[in-house]
Image (cartoon, rainbow, N blue to C red; front, side):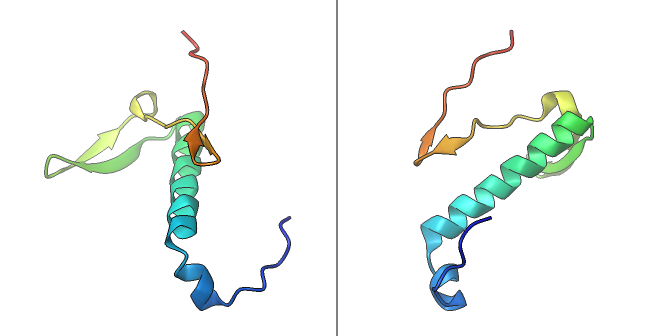
Length: 75
């Protein structure tokens, strides 16, 4: 568990790079969870609602220090 921050909520939510990074990590975690559990997701694509099956869910590699980590291909 991370140490408690001394920053106010206003300071935290106006730290846009940190907020954007946290949101991206949350989206990535949700996509991975759906893919691993074999659940489809629903996205907006070309002006239409589209259901993507788990095998078509694309998840970017995790980032470390603002850089993408290299991920070995499973194929």
